[in-house]
Image 1: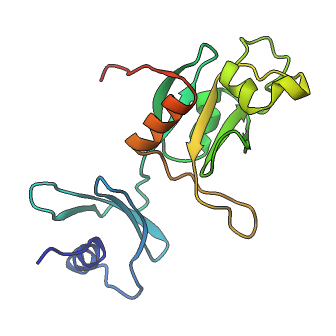
Image 2 (image 1 turned 90 degrees about the vertical axis):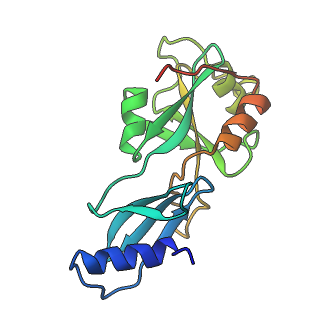
Length: 185
């Protein structure tokens, strides 16, 4: 019988003599087997080995999982980028940012723009301007934008970035008519 990730994490933490006094909570469980679990305020990352179905758990607390986002350039080309948290968005855009929902972008997706995204002298983002309804506002979005997948807003309106699956990326590339550029590994 295959162990669940919670049971595996529970037993590994006991073996590691950390002692279990709280419940192991699964934060996210992706179809590719990547799991983020929380135990006593620390997050742990685990991945399922396809050969055996067993979970490998990283016991170094506070390991941040990487989330895939889609960076869209003004010329409608796009690249998949990985971030660990919202601070990485600032690094990708080289300045402060704002997260914008658009009726043209279905939930659970949103667009991340440079906070100062208008009249800054960068090339006009065709996709960003269309999502921002520039034809009505006469304000174009300039520079790169980032498309994210997120959780439903909590009662305070806050969201968490959960990252995109291959299917999410394919959907957005097709829907927004983007040219996906695959960076060499």
